[in-house]
Amino acid sequence: MRSLKPALTLGALGALLGFAPVASAQITLTMSSWVPPSHLLTRAQSDWCGEVSKATSGRIQCNLLPKPVSPAPATFDAVRDGLVDLSFSVHGYTPGRYVMGKMAEMPFLGDSAVATSVAYQRIYERHLAKLDEHKGMHVITVFTHGPGVIFNNKKPIASLADMDGIKFRVGGGVVNDVGKALGANMTLKPAPQSYELLSSGVVDGVWFPDESIVSFKLDKLVKYRTAVPGGLYNTSFALVMNEATWKKIPKADQEIINKMSGEWAARFIGRYWDETDEASRKVQREAGVQSITADAKFVADFKAKTASIEADWIKEAEAKGLKNAAAVLAEFRAEIAKVK
Picture 1 (cartoon, one colour):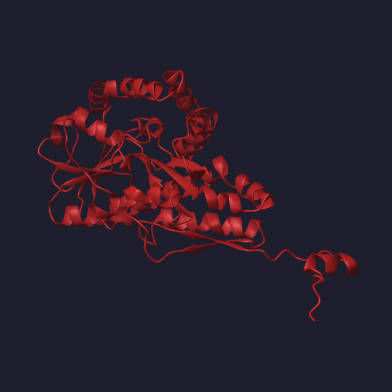
Picture 2 (cartoon, rainbow, N blue to C red):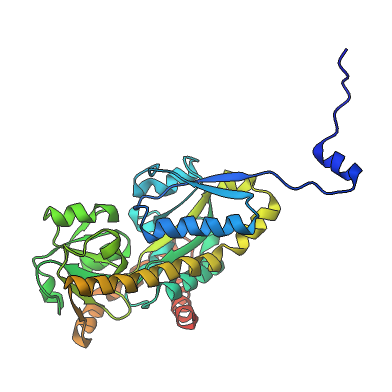
């Protein structure tokens, strides 16, 4: 008759022999990306996970899936519903759902993705996280891309009037509000569709950070670039993990991941944006893209046309539970100025 006495566990055996067993549990997180493998977001997400893996001595691993599990606008839902463990997306791809993220998309916030991303994360932790817009998701970090720029293949744009007759692709969120305020002809589409839209003539231009011109292979499709000091707009992103997956991670490893989340991760990703923006500007020059910087009149006209956007957001945010939204926005701008 077989004995019912339980065998010694590995831990108990180790204790009897006087040594501590090596932890062997490993968790592999599935990751999804809706931009190409060479895109900085795919690389930044994978490299962030690589840093986590090193810090946890390999107990946390990541597996980048060969194809995205959903279209870009459905990515947050895919994470929430457990189709994938970890991914990022743009808040503005689902209009009306993520009101707080609009704060980080206002015009003239700054010229560095590191500064806006780190400041955004600080304000998120202090004021926005408690409103729980990412229900069912564990937020690793929030961040922005670099300053938005005007690109087109029709003519140089040195004034608001020069945008007449040009069709632009935009990505949603505040940039869509900016386009409406300026009276621009806008088409709301996810970033990966930009090449097809431009090459087929559906649109004549895009509003993008510099990085995207190289990432989406648009350097041969655009001829003119207009930079606006402080940025035409920004885009709000979040890197998120499925909540149930997060709860399965041992507490000690959660603590390690937390140290590499928040501001640490915002700065980590922001550096990718700034470096790639600079590299893209070099490629644009080599491709013969003509670049101008908006002058004082252009900026003044732009600010006059878009002045109501901040006030509208303040009302919307306060209706959703954010107290003293105007003060929070001012605090955000102050934080951007502090970031080194």
